[in-house]
Image (cartoon, rainbow, N blue to C red):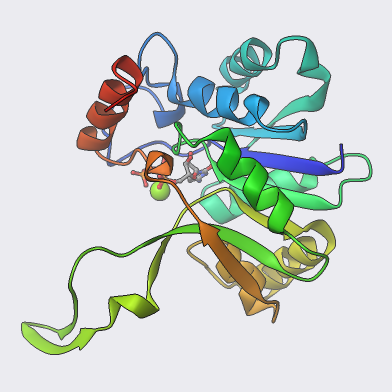
Length: 229
Ligand code: CTP
Ligand code: MG
């Protein structure tokens, strides 16, 4: 394949507060990481790099083997870093072969539809990054301390999801530039944009929500138990 998906799963899940790293918490009998990888392998064939927490490489290998089946040769596990940005950089360093498009995906968005993964990959061009995003539904205010400064027009805003897709060469040079400058960014699109490259957005899915808090894990458990809801 010409496309690779870096699945970042090296976080500890501080806000979830489980006893294991978030990627290895069970939704049903399958973990967060297993569900994420099932989605990845249900999408069009791609190279898959799983970025695991240090000490959990073997656990990640097991999940990769289970999700990949006879396509296990497409996958590889590497150890992540202290920040998400470092974990993505580790994933980029593990790419092999003639990959031209790289998608970066949060394992914590475990129920992301495979169609979203394919749609992002299809929208990437040689010069442009792509993010899936949802409209903002809440009424938003800009504040300063206790003072409400102004209303923010939500039509100008979207909520970003993953996978985020990029041309490989420009993403690699953008990450190298971010590392050299010591810049810290909230997502991959921000790293890419900081290097001067354009990013577009396509429609995301409510199912691609990120499991962050216990309430999110409860929601994922309900969706897996009763998918029609
Ligand atoms: N991630 C990673 N390496 C890190 C931090 C985060 O690979 N050093 C990954 C997480 O595993 C997750 C994704 O980035 O799939 C989004 O991060 P987040 O939801 O913040 O997960 P955690 O950092 O694990 O959670 P928390 O911030 O609550 O500790
Ligand atoms: Mg985090």
